[in-house]
Image 1 (cartoon, rainbow, N blue to C red):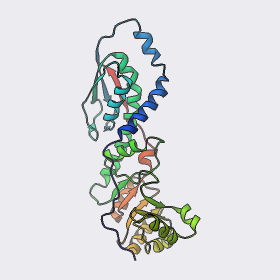
Image 2 (tube, rainbow, N blue to C red):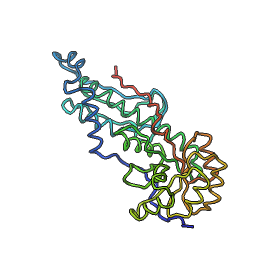
Image 3 (cartoon, one colour):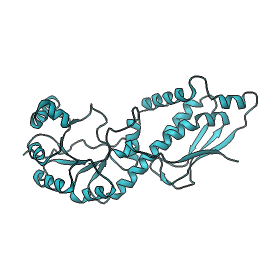
Image 4 (tube, rainbow, N blue to C red):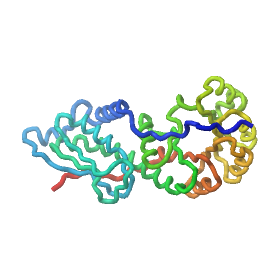
Length: 297
């Protein structure tokens, strides 16, 4: 039986979003909203009149975990680079905003503030929604050694941002993509017709990369425990099967449980002793945090 690898570089937590990626995403959002023409409502209202400097604020319309402050700053630096909108954060990423609390304030020309409003709120709402949901789940198992993981079930183009939001909410990040970790799933095993052979091929090609293998039956667990896989995923197994799998594994591998996990079961799995529990809904089923931007009187 192969032993558990010490010092495994898994899971990780994204601490900061790549500035280049963020710029690319915001520019896509700007093209989507302005299409090279601009905000014609704002243009019509302010075309022939001078604009007085105004103050505005983004507030939380419900309680939640703030995420996306730097994104909002980047949005206005791109959208309103000619209008000089000044943004002053009142909350930091990871902090709780109570209903009615101010998250950030803005000062500048009204045309600049309103043009970037929806783009900034869309990003912040989605990211804060992910962070809020993650915090709720992470708090349920905070007294255990089990770590809550995300998945690759993210909005196209938004993966790094959504995974950053998971980390902000207290969760951990599974692999970023298909390039940074090996995860042998059922279709891979079917293609090479052997779980053991699949692990051997992966280990030979990438000896220093973490290897995880998906198992769906106790028989597969018994086979996988004899390989050089670092992590065994127990996919869609009920709690009794998870306990049996842990008995077979005997602490020789890291264990990730995935599939059919809700709040109640998350707590149960932490009690059973799973190392990791992954939940796709952290990123694929998200209610954005309700935020609003209003001018001060």
